[in-house]
Image (cartoon, rainbow, N blue to C red; front, side, top):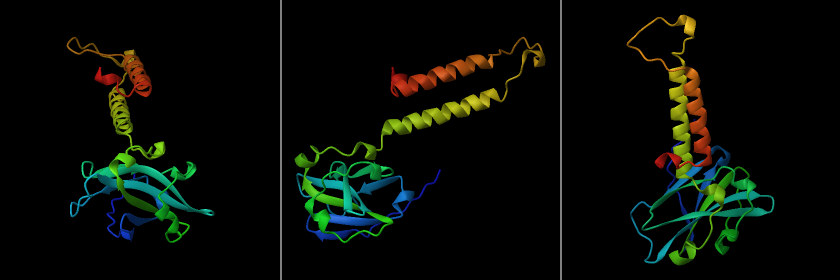
Length: 193
């Protein structure tokens, strides 16, 4: 697992309502976090539509990934794999930006009326799902528990009589683990019931 934390504040203003930020080596970046610093809020009724753009032989391809607003001052977007998706229509300012180098991408923020932004559909691959994080955490937790408990497994010939100790066959633990994984894949919220 790689964790790279780099705050970029070199945002360039293209015009009064459009801003861009360069991302070098985008193939090494899985997620980006966009957040407001608190120095100046969006004008009432507006927010920032967030777009991810990458260079291609035919120009810059843009994907709408979501938005931020005064009420939602930060968001996480998954950008890995967006090149495989068809680009969405980006704001007109984005076509007039400087061409991107082959190994870079840009985040574009367009200040727009919130009622228009919320009607846009982000590219599905960009949504950093909370359930994905819960599922990954739960799976890793279960794997760790299973591996730990299995490390104490012994066969019946190795057992010594201990009247005050309960033994659980490791096959029961394995059956429970496989059942839990299957339920988690079918419905990540099943454990809430």
